[in-house]
Image (cartoon, rainbow, N blue to C red):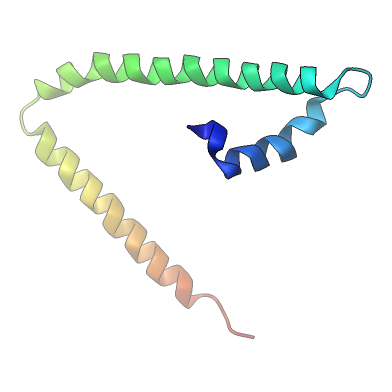
Length: 94
């Protein structure tokens, strides 16, 4: 999915060259760094999935956890909305 995303291409074009050596073929280095990125992403994504699978059954046993989760999420969104509304007022028009 990320392969066809232009933002991913721009990120790699801007970020990876600083880690490349001039004496080695760029395509080899690009492929190696890209593969390393995919491997790290796979490991972290698997860790997130395993952690969620471990935590979810324990959270479901706690009474009212869904209600508290929905309340917490609503408060976060309301807080972000207030922050966005207040930050747009601070921008001065010069």
